[in-house]
Image (cartoon, rainbow, N blue to C red; front, side, top):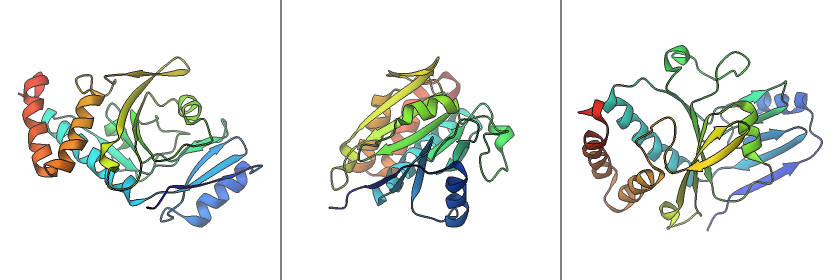
Length: 216
């Protein structure tokens, strides 16, 4: 069974970090997390992309059903030179500022607001404190799917954390979709695995019509 591979480098300057981002380009397989001279590189597995696509299909159905605008970014590079921190989650999504981000090919936190929420898929433990990085970047909400690679990948755990002050707190419900619990997201993932994606999406639409007034 394949395992997530992480490499942590010490004493890496910000200029070297940005040089690596530029030289390796957006098509690279490695994803970077930078925390004040420490650079962690990870090579995602197929499971990362599988979960991202499942969650994105769920988000698109929810926003389409509710008539909400949304702009999503796959593996966005979220960084700020003044903080000397940067990260690349599986995805970042804009709801409140969707119109502002429409047509933009990448996120620039020097001028753009942070995503309303991000998705992180964790198959192994990072040596960096990612929540501290997310907090300083001002990301209001973090979705985390924690599992292990292999046949039981879609039997993991899902967590929603929202930012209050300078700390994240785990909650059953998030800020972006107040009616959507971590348990309901996990149910969608499980149904996608056991019943198939189309059935899971159909069940999600029916559920939305019951719990979200504007979806009726």
